[in-house]
Image (cartoon, rainbow, N blue to C red):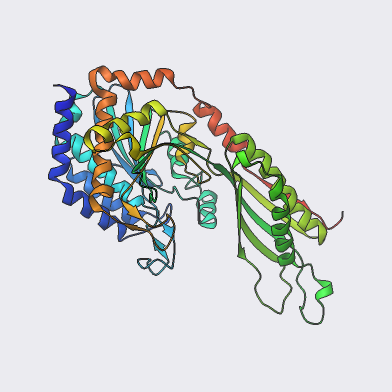
Length: 444
């Protein structure tokens, strides 16, 4: 069959099921769960995949699932949707824990499900030369460090990010190309972002250790860990003018434990810090500066600091040849023109798709259909069809482009791609930059 005929069959299958796709996304919205806690959400995706008559692989990265369809030959295309939510208690739809899908991941899962319907229900998948994996992946938002550290200590996971974890477990060993969409509110009349470059980051779990004493009659006998943390924040702020604009540096910090009783000098104060930058080298360089700032704060008050460093995610760089296939489909089948697109979006935000982009070609489209900023109380789906259904069509049509005619386009993209890491080198890099640094300033 001609490629255009396959695309029409795929679109028809999605249109015939658009209400089911929209309802699936709304159903996911009702059970927001943080990373590696997406048990209910995973079960909903498993059920939807089984309804498509597919055998489902579960627990691919502690939570998460996937189905595989098509020929057993390569290349293998992965369409990805993310399972986790964020915490935004001020959002009107937040649950009792403050969880809400103000990240738009419930829309991603609808896009994932819709693209699977298009390719599977139409039978188009059997006319293509290659395999497609539809993957619901956990833990994209790098939050809730304490819970994830507990899972690591229990041997249940190795990495904070779900894509990192799946790669480590060998679940991505056969995959050649990764594709996904993310929602964005466009306030400039544009409709779609084609390519992205994003920051990577390091995570730091920090514990300042001092000495308790009575805050009223003997504060001089204590070592105030909260004062160390306050000094550390000021030290970090003093460093900001040393950051290069082109590195898009962001350093975010919260205090997760600031003491226990107001009349006791706090002897333990804990922080979580995220050190973002635009390149891997800049991440490492800035992270060293932040470590010095933390140690200086402990040294000033003769206390100690324990710094648990871990690579968060690596910078994202999407493959332009891959992303342009999506753009062409949006123009031909989504009724857009060149003026509706932003070709390149550079942001200090981060995603664990960045890790995969260091190894294989990746597409990360920013699609319209929502209003309000991501991760804010104003976030909501503005148009059901544009958010839930249209990207599902475009993902499926892009798969057809890649795998049609002996997967000619996919093979051309793979031939031109230059990886920054092999899997072995990537895992070694993560391990090398994951360590605990204990600094004692009491005797200096």
